[in-house]
Image (tube, rainbow, N blue to C red; front, top):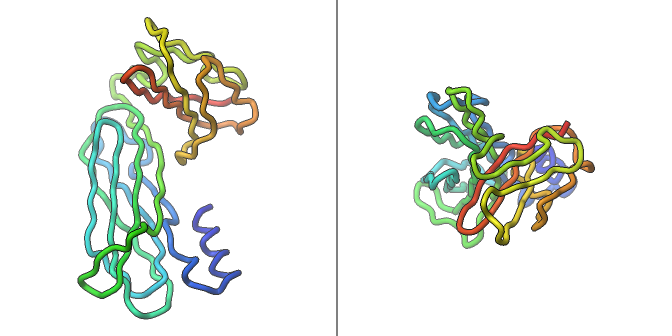
Length: 212
């Protein structure tokens, strides 16, 4: 969808300034297990050609993965498509968030990024446990039920009575709602896979939720 939007902007405005951005993020294999090495591919479109890669970086902190790349822009006003790949060693089972920042600079072979990033995009993905124990649905401290659900979802945190916050995201990491109640309604959302981020005390948990 994002790639289609970029193409439409190029068509309607006929100005390459609008054509720069991240068009897609994919992972391989699409359903990795704890034994799988993972390749993340970030598809990007730049508004100048050529657009060689100058540098890229990736880091992992707990279940959050952050990457960035810098491409050097040429002087030709033409669309330039590039795919940056990032290789990850096998990860522990769980839900991971991935965020990529796209930057560019002018001057071939040696360039510095602009003050503002060109684009930022993100996804969630799950690494599946080989033990068959679904850690995502049955967290030891947090219960969400019913799951799957078509409407009301209850959230119970064992042994905790303080403040907490619930954030509901779709698979593309788009924030859909925020709540401080122990019940939320998902009746207005389409069927599919969602992720809940529950923050309480000094802890944060990500739990998979299915809308049926």
